Image (cartoon, rainbow, N blue to C red; front, side, top):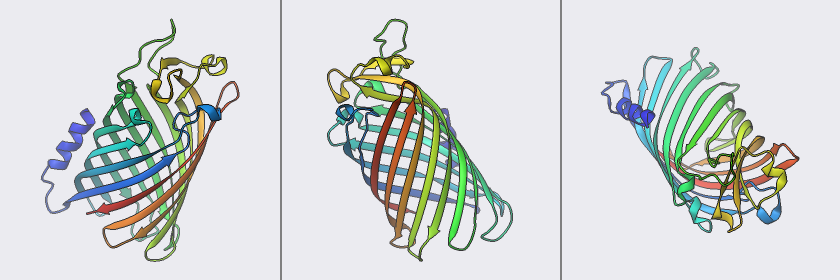
Length: 287
């Protein structure tokens, strides 16, 4: 919440002629095949969701090579079947970007931080999340660009009562680090394509029926009726690999239609193996 206040203050400051107000709106329809992060088919649950992202703030040109963006952000996501996963987020973000030189081929580096308070219909998932990111890239040609980066994510949950003596019930206290590589290609003036690969090491949450394999490697356990009366949520360490393909069609100077697909796999101890995929169709308006 301190980051939220800081972003609000930055966005409200009268930076002068080199600052301009920005606004983004993104309604989206998404599907995920394994929301519960379960290993067995009987425990894997998929669902569709409607999401709306809104953000607004200021873009500041500090110099010819340096920019600063400060925004207030709001998100709501509503699931069709598993309604306890529906949530509302409110927070803020700050990003600094530096470009090393002039021209389209000059490399750049970016530092960003965001924070949000999350409110779920199921209060066990309520919490605060933060994300820090360092990334850099360059345009290889007039049509092809590449970037890579490191991301730290952390989530502090507000609920979760212990179910097993000596084991925490805070299954949604999650902490991880990831790296990514992304390539973007402008197929024509309106169509942009992208591919991205991520690898993350850290805490994950899985909801399934009780089993010794996952119990023996879990650092937190709590009852989670979202996916069934006999389901429990487990926190454990794992490595997640994800691949994403995206396409964006520009409707004009300020808006586009976007389609993204993803596939991911998580590996943990005791031969625990999670698979999932999903897709998102969205409309983005930027001013």
